[in-house]
Length: 213
Image (cartoon, rainbow, N blue to C red; front, side, top):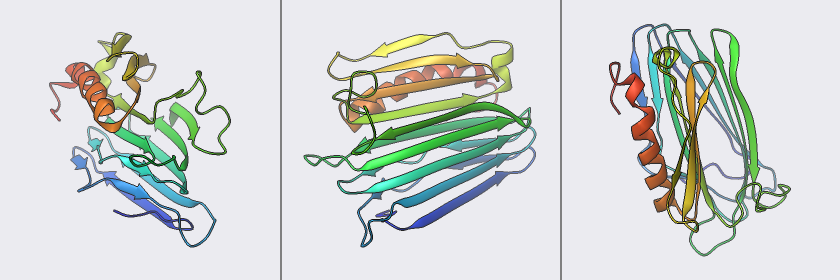
């Protein structure tokens, strides 16, 4: 979709009731564009997953076009036996153009307790975003968060996935919760997708008795 534009306010809410399995994706990439106003756009996602239920949130990439300014928030509430796969891909600028600005905040609670609370900012106006401690020369970033009770018995290992040094890297790290988080940065969307697909094949295994992507 060619949205959100500057000044837009978008909100998505989804609930998986007890025992349900909900797979949410998109038909095409989401394109954040500069609007008629200089005001930033808001894109808020609220997910609720009940006991023994599952949500798989795997949309196509978010592309932050030049001049865009997007603030994206995720608020996710999980029951203790709930399962979650959350995948996001962000491309900073279209081919041959400078990046837009994007700030994301992800808050995940499991059984009422915080499992993950993180914030990231990229693009013009975000201090140090293109420095060596953040993205450096990469213009594509993404992550996969997997929450599954199976990790209580079999926590994931810490693993590093590489293409060539110029193409990208991904890190799989276990979280207390039980959960696993893959974080990736790459030179473009194609390479980012390869990294995330490779890492997801590993994170899927403890949950294989419950579901397949």
